[in-house]
Length: 403
Ligand SMILES: *Cc1c(COP(=O)(O)O)cnc(C)c1O
Image 1: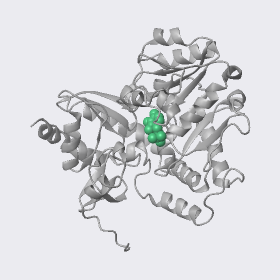
Image 2 (image 1 turned 60 degrees about the vertical axis):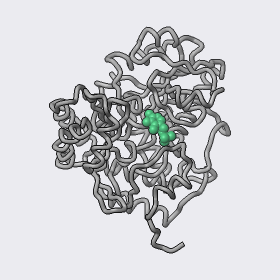
Image 3 (image 1 turned 120 degrees about the vertical axis):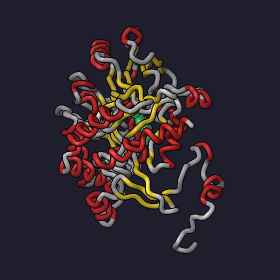
Image 4 (image 1 turned 90 degrees about the horizontal axis):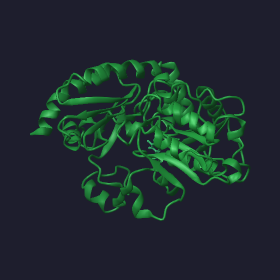
């Protein structure tokens, strides 16, 4: 191998070497800066997907690069046999920003799926391990590992791998009575995304999360909020449930996080609220080689620092509201959902895939999250001017896609 890797024939090399299960990529990207990325031909794109709602600070933010570089040059991996300052600091900060009470704790892992696996194991220990039922919601996405997959609603993801983890029941989206019927004294936990991400960026109807909290509390079951996509400022508050319009004042038992938390590096977290939930797993019952890895937790601390220093929660709220108001005025857009800078818009023509392809050709990375909806999850650092270039181009993109 030479030091300058040739990118010629990358499509064939990709398909000849990467497991086809993950799908075919659209471009070979070589560099990113802020909200922009460049492919191997030098073409520039505005990144309105951010690695699927991950790059909260955009690409190569100087403070992030600096913090990660310093940490990897100081102390990399140590295992849970040892502690590190970035690990402890990030856990304390997560408890703080989540508004979790005394006796709360954080379990670190490497991804969103793993954070949900940890929460699932906690759910298995509710009432001394005597409850087998776990409730999830149709349209939910909680990850692809076997436990998280059992919670994920989409049959195409799940059925080829049956038998799956037993005990999971899916209830129809937004249906309070269906939830009421399942949340009984055999139920260990309800898993909910405050806004369904992969399900199309769908907001629950008003009152749903509060009812879920009331029902789980009454039944002695956990309310587990999957904030892997919605958390870390994405929706304009640290966690989406803290927005009164979304969370309606509820306090969850467990919150799972990942994606934005690492700002581009792989880290996940399960936050247990209060001593009872913290005590569900006892020493020896869970762990991971990389749990709390100093480099990943340094990345997490840098993400939180920059969100604070640059006022990105407020920025996400204001820019998100502006984006929504601009999108609804565009011909061919029939609805806009989400919160902050996690948004999707529904296309009258129902041609999300064609629109995303036309957008890419025009220099914008967007995601056809369903057949008829386009998801936008740009870096939280994106400027109004940058978003404006997309809004200006969108009518033309819709026209091209319809042709
Ligand atoms: C992406 C996502 C996951 C899975 O995270 P991975 O890091 O891909 O394992 C779980 N839950 C939600 C809500 C997600 O958006």
